[in-house]
Amino acid sequence: MTEGSNQRQVNDLAVIPVRSFDFAFPEDLDPLWIPLAPYRAHFYNGVSLTMPYLEPFLCKTMREAQQLVEDEQLLEDMKGFIGQEAQHYRCHRRLNERLTLNGHPQFSIIEARISVAYERLSKRSLRTRLAYSAGFECMTNGFTNWILGDRKALFENAQADVASFWIAHMAEECEHKTVAFDVYEHLYGSYWVRALGVVHGSFHVLGLGCIGMTSALHRDQKGSQLQRLAGTLRQLGAVAGKVGPFLLRALHPRYNPRQENEPEWLDDWIAYNAQLGNLGPMPVIDTTSEDMSLPSHLTQPAR
Ligand SMILES: [Fe+2]
Ligand SMILES: [Fe+2]
Image (cartoon, rainbow, N blue to C red; front, top):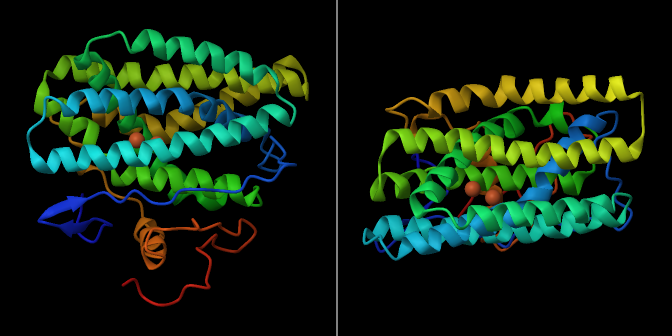
């Protein structure tokens, strides 16, 4: 974690804050929550479907690893990681329920498949699961930089609660980006297993997300099958272009997530929440505003 980040010091240990994390998704939420960008909206919807299964899997893996770790700082980091991820998946679950009710009943069947996939994965060795976790978190770091940095291009005029939720989720991902990597390195450290985890953790989640995305596009029946295929490939091409470099760097034997820059604007988001004592409500971004900045009613510097 870099200087100037959110961590406060308690008893000389840096603490990853577990915030009150909540967004009010409207009852009439349109699953196509980004106007004129159905492929992008359904890509994020598809990925959201994985979160209530993936993130509990990460927490369970981390809890198991806690039994083997004695380093006080690492244990504190793991506590923060589990606390943040637990908040995320609860919020995703509420979003997914809303999306399912509002036009995509097939999401329940897909979620059942995702659940089975993570039950199967949870039977693998702790080393494999930690490598998967660390690998997935490398990919997430790519999404964090993309989403926070390009929030205007990605979410202009999007439904504010959903866009702000994704922004908040990715901001917290950046705060705990080193934890799964550190735990894996602390307990195992084998390069090849970690490298395999980068591929496994990233493509497994993206693959499951694509199932949800294509099911939603199919149900909407907008455009021809060829147009839907082209739109899907364009969206995945954008993911490859923006997130791919993070995965390539993560495959380097001397990779460490600390080498990755933190996105600009993250400190502003952190400071906004700190002014509220991290007790919420989470900032809801005006997606119609010029620079999609944070709400301006808090103007005092962070305490
Ligand atoms: Fe998360
Ligand atoms: Fe995470």
